[in-house]
Length: 113
Length: 114
Image (cartoon, rainbow over all chains, first blue to last red; front, top):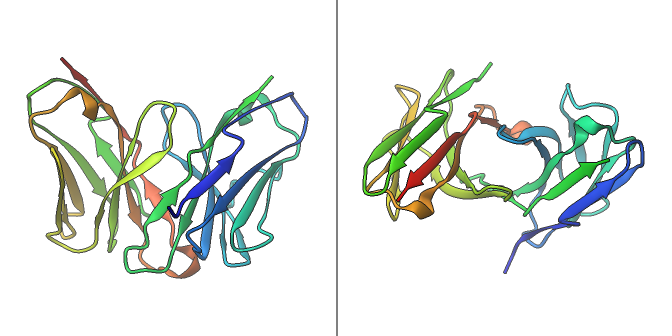
């Protein structure tokens, strides 16, 4: 089945220790998104790629970076995680059909000690 | 700036009852989505509503869209415990292209008691 896969599902890191989260998709979708979601809140868009074009949200901290080496993969790098970065990180993809629906991966739960 | 409001934000109800969740948005949009989220899990797409008067049904959930009123409703019929979850609506800003982003409501946490 076509899907969005995130690894790892759970990540524990120490304060200030860099961490990389990965997302892969078999949907061949042009657009990939990274969201941060904290408990009891709506998802917050960090950035997205339209093919290779990178779009950063104005309020995304510089501490967050992203790479998309090819259509299938996208990475979220957190250079120096702080306690406030503990959250669920969701990857989503979108094709260019009339529905323009976003499909979400299972998420990575990040804990910062 | 497009804003999306959901109400109620929290709803506790008995099994077997009917209820409606509301999603209002502030500026014109051409599509609206409903997602479900179980605790600790990701977002699952429920409905895609693309035009005025659109109605979609999935089991005990039925969603509709009134673009003139800028309102979507998600109606629950004869609720069962399995429907307990947080429900988000999200609206697309008109404009499309590479900045085709979703603006999210705050979510409605639904608890259905036996």
